[in-house]
Amino acid sequence: MKTGLSLTELARKIEGNRDLKSDMVASTAGMKVSTDPDGVVSLQIKDGTLATSSFPILPTAHDQIGARLAIPGRYYDRMLKDEPDLLAANVNTWLRRNPERRMLRTLGGNLRAFLSDRYQRIENEEIAEVVLPILADIPDVRIVSSEITDRRMFISAVSPRVAGEVKKGDVVQAGVTISNSEIGHGAVVVQPLVYRLVCLNGMALPDSKFAARHVGRQLDERENLNAIFADDTRKADDRAVLLKVRDMVKAAVDEVRFGETVGRMANLTEAKVKGDPVKAVEVLAKKVGAAEFERGGILKSLIEGGDLSAWGLLNAVTHQAHGAASYDRSMDFVAAGGALLTLPKSDWREILEAA
Image (cartoon, one colour):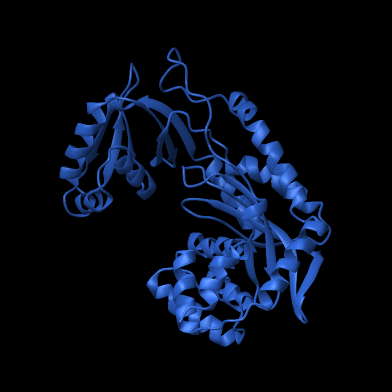
C-alpha cells in the first residue's frame, strides 16, 4: 500500500478544503459554458435575480457533464483539447434542450462536480470526526495509509493486537479501511482490512463491507434553486449513515471474524498452480481488471515471491499497490486482493489450471 499522508497532514488538508467548499443547486437553463483566450473552460451560472458566477471546470466535472449530456467521452476530450469553442457550443445546446436542476460542487472557485439534485453530501470532515476518535480508542492502533485524492478520501488503520499466521512466519493483522467521495466517485465505504507484515500489502474484504450511496431527498419545487443547504439540515440527513460508519469501524477488528478470514487465507496456500504460471497471471489479471502493462508487474511479484499458490497469486496482485500510478489505483489493487479472497472455487480452478 502507498503510505500517502501522515495523520497530521490529512487533518490539515481536510480542514483546508472545508473552508474552500461551496455548493448550489441550479437549473441548466441558466447555465452556459464559455472559454477564455487562455483556453480555460468555465461554467457560467445565472439564475433568478442572482448575478452571473463563473467557475473553471475541473476534470471530474467535465466527465460528469459529458456523461449527463450523452456526449461520447473520447469526442468530449478531443473537443476540450483541440476545439474548446466547439465543446462550448455542443454543451450549451444540450444544457438547454431538456432543462433540469443539478447540484454544483465547487472548491476554491472551481467546479469540481456536476451532480443530481438528490445527491446527499457526506463530507470528508464528517467522516473523519466520527472515525478518528474510534480508531484512537483501539489499543496500539496504527494509521498505515491515508490520502485525499482528486476523487476520494482514504483512511486505513491496523490493530497489531489482532493478528494471526497464514503460514509459519507469514503474519497478518486486522484493520479497517474507510473511503468517501464528495464528488460522485463512490459511496461511503467501510471495509475490514487485512495487512500482511511480510510485504506491507493490504486487502479490503468485500463480503463484510458497509456502503452508503450519496442519495438524499430531492429539493422541493418551492425551494430557492440556488439555496445552499443549511448545515443542521444536512447533518440530520447524514446522521444515520454516520452511525453505521461508527459501528462498522468498531466491528472491523473483531477477533472471531478475523480468525475466520485467516483460515480462508490458509486454505489458499494449499491451492497450487498446476498449469503455466504466465497463463495463470493472464487469467488472473483479467479477473481483477489489471491493464496489460500491469500484468508484467504481477508476474514479476509472483516470481520474486516464490509462492506458486493461490495465496502467492493474491499477494502478487496486492503488491502492485506499492508502485501504482496513483493513490486511487493503489487502492484498486487493495480492493482486488479482497475480491480474490472471496473468489469462487471455480474461478480459482480456471486460474490455477490455465495452460
